[in-house]
Image (cartoon, rainbow, N blue to C red; front, top):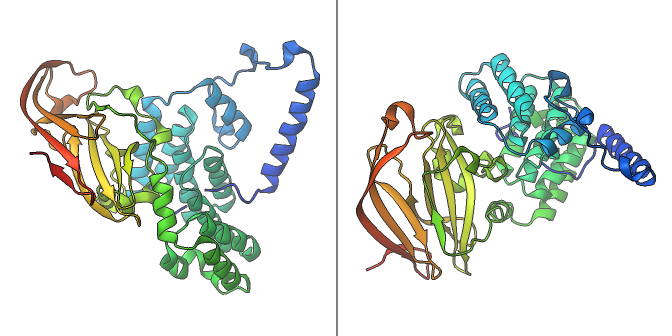
Length: 383
C-alpha cells in the first residue's frame, strides 16, 4: 500500500485531452454566436443538485462549483466520517459511500483524493484514476502527491512506461519520500522493470533537494500577512475555507498532525493562515487548528529554518484545553505579538454543545503577555 497516497497537471489522460478539445470547440462556437448566447446561464442550464452519475463528470463539477461557492457543513461532516471509516475503521464500503455523499453535497479536492486512495487500496484502478484526475482538476496540493499515486496505479496495472512518466513527474514536482519509493509494495512490479531506474535518476536530477522542495511548497501556501493581524478564536462556520486547508502531505511540518491517530485526527482540521516574516535565518508562519466538533479555533505561531526544520512554536490564540483561558492575539505593525487571556462564560456548556451558536454571556480579562521573535527565530516573552 502506498504510504503517501498522493497532484499535478504534467501528464494528460486521453479523456482529459478529449475534454480540452471539447471545450476549445465549444468556446469557438460560443465566440461566433449571438451575444445573448455567450454566457448561457439561464436557470434551465444550471446544474442544481449533483447526483451519483455526476461524480466523475468534470465539466458538470466545474459548473456546480461556479454556482455554489461555499462548502456546506454537511459536506465536511460526511468527508470526516469517510476518513474515519477508511483510515481508522477500515470499513471501505461505508467510507466510499460517505465520500460520495460528501462530493454530491459539495465536491472538494480532498474528498476526491481520499476516494482515489480508497479505490487504489481496493484495486478499483479505473475509478482510482478518475478520482485522482478530479482531485487534480480541483487543485489538490501538493502537486507531487497525485502524480506519485498515479504511478502506483499504473504499476498495479502493469503499465510500466506510463508509471515511469508519473513517477519522474512526481519527483520533479517535489515528492520527497525517497525511501518509500524503494519499499512501496504498490510499485513492486514497476521497480523490476526496465523503465524504473532511468526515470528515477532523471527525476532526482530534476529535483535537487526533495526535502527542501517540500518545505518550499509548504511555506508558499501561506499568504503574506498585512499587519496588524487579529486572531479571533470565535469564528463562524463560513470562516473556514477548504481551499486553505493544510493537506496531510505536509504533516512533517505540523506536529499536531503527526500526533493524530493513524496520522488522521478526524476531529481536527488545519488551515494555512499567514506568513509574518521571512529572513535568511527563519520563516515565521501562523497556522490554525480547528476543533471540528466544538468549533473552537487555535492559532499556532511557528518558526522554521531555511530547510524547514522547526525552530520554535507557541500557541498564541484560542485554547487547546476546554478549561484553559481563551487567548485572543493581535500582531502589531512591528511584529510584536500581544496575547490577552480571558475567562469566558457561555450560555450553554461548551463541553456538551460546543461553540456553534453558543452565545457568550461574559468575557473577563485574566492576564496578558507580549512576545517577539528574535534574530534566531526564537519566540521570546517580551519584558
